[in-house]
Image (cartoon, rainbow, N blue to C red; front, side, top):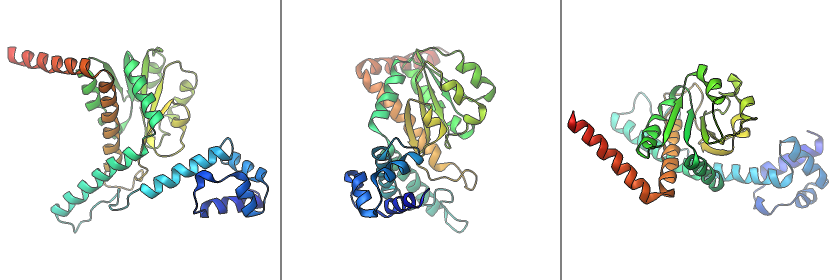
Length: 274
């Protein structure tokens, strides 16, 4: 950054007022630089201009203000804690994870994701390791609506499956970092695709967000390796998938009640006859 751009950056980091009403001219007046300096800084930070940067700063400040710190997401209990205290700490952590995930929902992205999934003939969920384990309940729920959902967790199948999809399919990519699939050279396929894609990643500007159509976020609380377990990401992913299922169900509520009742009744009769 230039000297003047650093002045603007420091001003924005320390700004305590209502940033939603802050203009480039306001910043220029307060920092004794030109409004064009504000624009240049915005573009250096990967934004289209000041209004774009302002929106991202506002979202980030809102996220930080609402973020919880009651329980350490990576080490929620110690060796000295009793099992009763451990149970309480995990309960608090999981409850607060759901609340924070709900705050990260962006209305337009959530509506788009539900619309894509509702219209899709088949849903393909790309996930690896622990993220993959969270998707099986969603697949089962889709089955009760007689809707096909496929879990793709074998890296060797990723490129093959992507090349067989049609415009009537929909993909969900789950990656906490948002960079896992980039290492497998998948993102170049996503740039030229003709089917809708949804990303579930931590709250950040990552590669997967840049090449998908609808973005849903996991609280950015976990370290990649330095932790006891994936408490936050697992809970958040499961909650997001439950919300997506509920949104799909709600679009044809009465019809889907008939479908789910039919599914459970057919299964009950099947086991009864055995």
